[in-house]
Length: 245
Image 1 (cartoon, rainbow, N blue to C red):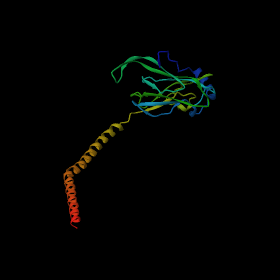
Image 2: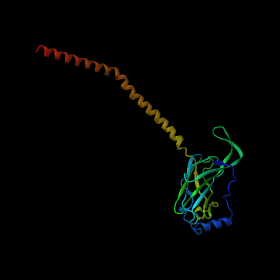
Image 3: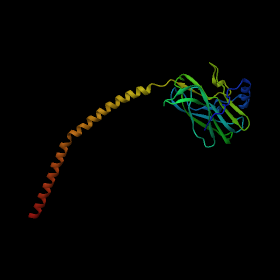
Image 4: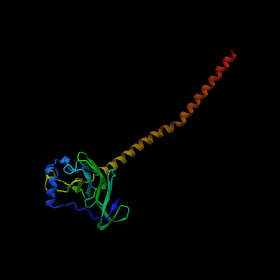
């Protein structure tokens, strides 16, 4: 479902971040306990499915909602259905309309994907949320961040911290889920060329092999016919011999 509601602000101030850190086990959570993205790195311009893992609740409280902010440059997102959640795509207008690959004018983008459940995810269990999207073609050698707010029955955790330039992301208490982007590989085009050459060579060899038996077919047929005729003559002679006897 897509809506036009106002996007929830995910980037919060210093004071709120301090409160968030206090919620996350006193601000000392191991990296494996963070809400994060399983995949990576991904290629610029590629179509990817990113899996957001939620490993625990908010300081022991069960999770009721996960709101994922989509970075600029990504316009279309297809969420994977999750049976225990309703999913909502929050739209926003593009500053400048664009034309998609089908020639259609696009005037809005998916700014946020929100998963909400009436069956809260217990603190001792985990869940995963998949988003299918295209990585921006100009995002090579960068990191894409997806600030995420995890709302629980009691409190919430804002996974929205983005490291400063040169800062180690592992130093953050509540880092935003992220994925590294690498340049699109040109191996595909080279591979296609090599494959084409190999295909041509293989086709030539197959053609040559197929041609040889075809040229010999008349001779084989003739030989079989002569052999069959000889067998018939032999049988007739044998039968005549028995009658005389």
